[in-house]
Length: 229
View 1 (tube, rainbow, N blue to C red):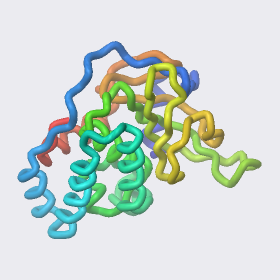
View 2 (cartoon, rainbow, N blue to C red; view 1 turned 45 degrees about the vertical axis):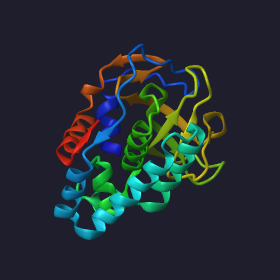
View 3 (cartoon, rainbow, N blue to C red; view 1 turned 60 degrees about the vertical axis):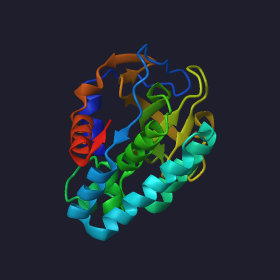
View 4 (cartoon, rainbow, N blue to C red; view 1 turned 90 degrees about the vertical axis):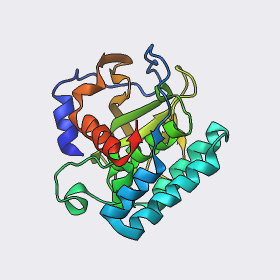
């Protein structure tokens, strides 16, 4: 994800985001992710064959099971699904590109994902289940690797869920199986975040998410697949 991170940082202030202090944008609640099941399945079959359809069906089954469940249950189910159904990898090996943001269908069909792909899958799963998009942030961070004494870090993305605007957000991460509050993830240094409503730095909206071209591309490809984000 280094290419995307460098591109975005070049257009945003350098101040770090406080994971516990980001306020919600004052927008209306976006509709839940909708999809034409037949069209999506046909797309999966034509592009990825039976294995793609089976992977898609496993995702749909989890979404069906989690409808009307408490949000904490949904968070765990979604996090567990994506962390176990998809293997971590890097874009050059998975897609032959330096930086590619995959749709949930593409990720499931490939069976491989980098950090952005995990987060995208989890984000749209929760939106489909009715979680308010204002409670979710796709967060760019620096993640320390090598243990407590290490100074080495990598560019990384996680999904943050805010129960209330001022709450300590819960972090969904493919590097750690457990969902824990951000205050317990001392290995993460936040950079900035975004969701369907905008880009956020230092607790304030700094512009439209439309400035993130790869996000626009993901939405366009999802619509072609039969999803309506």
